[in-house]
Image 1 (cartoon, helix red, strand yellow):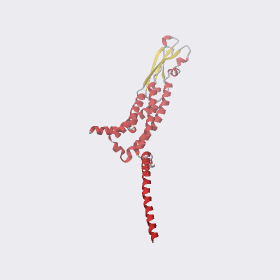
Image 2: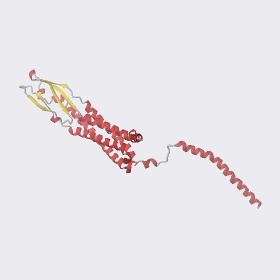
Image 3: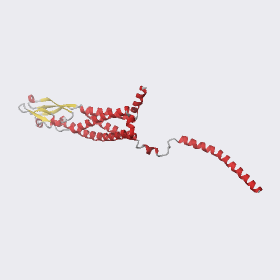
Image 4: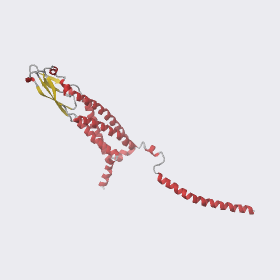
Length: 273
């Protein structure tokens, strides 16, 4: 008996309403984890005219939330063995943190919604309050995924520029002098961040697509769907009409014959009078 109840409860996960919510749950995790757990590194080499002052392995590490203006490294000045402390350019924490925050909240809401679908579906449908709240929150998240994904896509583009070794080399004074040579040794690996943006837009599609299925749960559309006559089953109707037509001629013959007979009898009586 308990098994049957459990099967009945989890059946909601097989219909679009529940199944899409499961996808939203997974993709929200993918989105905020690929962005929030990122750390990257790039390397440069500054080769001075006097080789003993060179630094051929300047390593710069950066990570989420990409407050790059706080990230610095020491580069040789190629003069008297001195070094310059150089800071990267830009603060992209707002778009990155906004994106991760939306991901975390989407994950929490999906968890709560799935629990309600599975264990309290009857309560969810009661008075239509559940579906209406669900519809409002789903619409809000669809909009937020659009805004946050677009903002983070732009933020990521700026992060890539600010951490491009060729761009960073331009900040080093020693590299402006022709007698010194500067080059990049290692580019930062950005594939994880590219993936996070892709997950953001996948979440947008999932939440926007889910709006229709949540809207159907509200029952608002039901009266409009019932209004037209049922045209979905032409075969039974046609069969019924055909049956009626087949019987009609027989019935009308009987009915037609009877009045004729009566009419004739009436005429005879009237003549005899």
